[in-house]
Image (tube, rainbow, N blue to C red; front, side):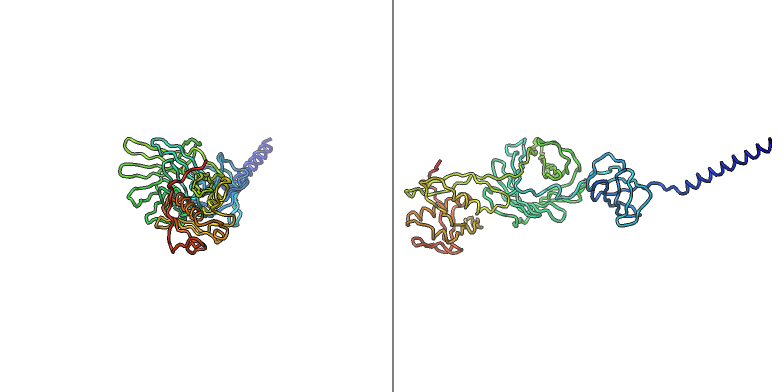
Length: 418
């Protein structure tokens, strides 16, 4: 009996030792999960590509997240903590399996993300604190990294040209009281203003040429406007006795601006965005009637982004306004160039068909030229027009003009035709 008990004890000891050895061996073979911080470069179905931050083992990883735990929407640029299984499959980038993702910081992005260039789009802002705080903005002209915006506040129309380059948003050109359309994309002022600068993080700061200090004072700052709530980059500009706060939303642009000074606050907030829109201008076109008297007809002329002003005005001028009106631009007559020069004179160059298709005596031809001068001088708010044909001074069987000789606008006796 004692012998059986002894054998049983020995078997029990052997079993216990075996279990201990198995546990020890299992423990030696177990590796812990790995956690590191990273920025998301791209997101695809069940996978994210990340760039690690201050992590020596690898700098880039493709993470299988099909079984990972996370509770936020993944987007490019987010800063996250990534926990993975210890197995690392060597390649570039390395292939790993995600276990858990924790959001540390929302993605902010690039300057271009917060000031998108959108053609044929009108932004409408609702204002408080000033009669001109409400305004509309339309994109007149646009290129890959430049945009010309027309701002109409009901009292004045001004033009701004912006450029996105070198991780900055810069206002390159400004002109007030600009009611006509002209492509200013290649123009620039001596003093230019930086509106937004990377890195888009709180604390980024720069000094303006007029001495004011501009800084990013918030990221992912929630702002409410009549159009809705937006996560924004908040930019504050401090002067001696005032502060301006601008809010830029991703894929939208400026959604709100606040100007504060002692005892006064003026704000403008985005109310709506009209896509596939046109900028409508009221344009007065002048015509001679059967007796040679001059009248004008006001037309609502739509302009789209990057439209050539000369083409649109030419088309509108040719549209019939009644059987009793004289024709100014005939079927094949065309505007070759149209611009306001530095001397505030309109320069208009027509093709030769304007002359060959004109069938008018001296008096009626004079009336036609006066109509042209009135139409384009009124549009550009100028007093004189220099007319050329194929780049040469105007010359017909009745009228010969000298180099740079101008026709002066004359509205005396002119009447409006309904």
